[in-house]
Image (cartoon, rainbow, N blue to C red):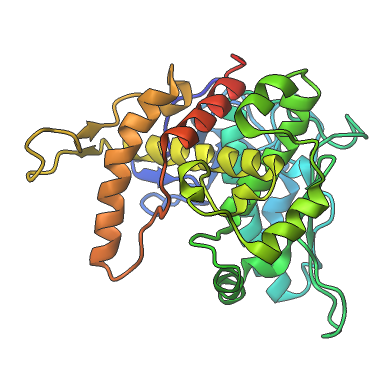
Length: 358
């Protein structure tokens, strides 16, 4: 997909600034939709029979995704297809019972995060096959609620052969914070879950199935080591000393698969955040920084950056500023991670992989 590098959009009717999740323009009242084939939010005019004409593409009338009826999606189905679902929602498998208002609200939060993920996957033209198109490894999301029985089994978030399961309870901020604290994590979000789990999927597709195991192992280590034993060792003993020198997170030390997925997620965090900074025309130029080491201007499209160094050179000053602002609000660092040289090398592998250069 080719689209403009932006995360801020403009209403074609009144020039109001719009955000990715907006459903209607607060200034002129036009209904809005995201057009994934163009990478744009568009104001709409009704065209009859549940069809809408996007002002950004008047020659391409279309339908809303079926999930728009639940206010869980604002994407349009690509024109010329008979699909009931948009490019993101066609990858849904099991969704919760939407007659339960708690389930519905949590599922909407899940969909907000999932659609941001798909924005990124489409920007890079990454392979996106549904389970129907590829019954063995097609990408599918199951949003599962825990059993109402308090003693029943709990849903575990994870990935297996293209099937990504997300525990619906993760959309409850209190429960998510409880799990973050109990697991000693500095960061836990729905979007983080989606980015991490899809990293496992793309390890399968872009590394294992694409014959890139050896170059990947040279960076992340031997993935053939026993995963179950590695997981048990991690939970029994914790991360090794000085793990920050070589890994982006403590969980990344568990196994090369988890290292890859964590690094993949962080690469997506960084690129997407820098794109938003670019959309706002942000620059960092601290007055106290006489030598200019903490100065940067995000005046490039991070999704199309030539090298990972260009991304990191912009990210480090920018994240230093973000963390400093967050502290003034009495919060912890917005991005509480250290990117040592070994981690930057791993991020470079992910950068080259998504751009087809490995």
